[in-house]
Length: 241
Image (tube, rainbow, N blue to C red; front, side):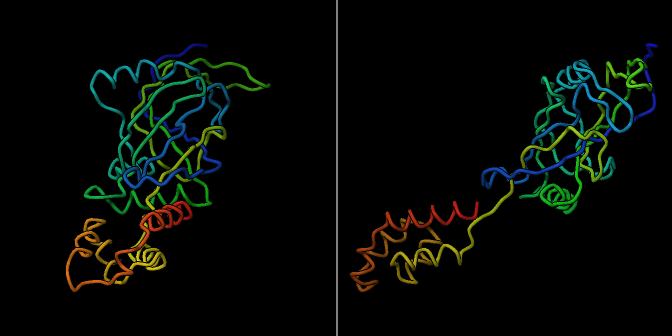
């Protein structure tokens, strides 16, 4: 039986069975991607979301130049980031977002959500929506609801979830070298403590300036093989990425 328009907001969660970190791009800290909903499988609430269910809703958001809100646990008083991309593909509702974990936007609730995503406990994405059009059908001896059109209101980061096949695919976090890490590499490569601290403060130009100042440094300082310095820094960065 076909039904249309449900005026009560519903919540549908999508489980995240694993998190795979990728890269180490400091200006991408807090970004993640995955699926807010997966098509054509029965979730734990007895619903099947069909391909194309979000088409009209996403078109409406695009017309407004906006995307649905990102909340923590469906709490409208707890916005924790921005959605950067939402689109349907053959698998489901693909999303990419950025948690507010850096700079002037940093808030504690977003940091908590980021830690949940990187942790080993249950975590997921969940949509808040109106069911616009659906049909009740028989499936495996029972009745399920086929959702044909969904008005998407928000997508939240949650703990437990309802759809076992959806997942967050990647989370990026900031892992910056500390001053102590860099100083150790520079000293191991042959720089003096003074040169190491100058390099950390203002970069390679400080070493050139220091080498040209009379009475400063020594011959071994000016003969340092900087290719070795760069190589050591790169190896250290790769090791902690």
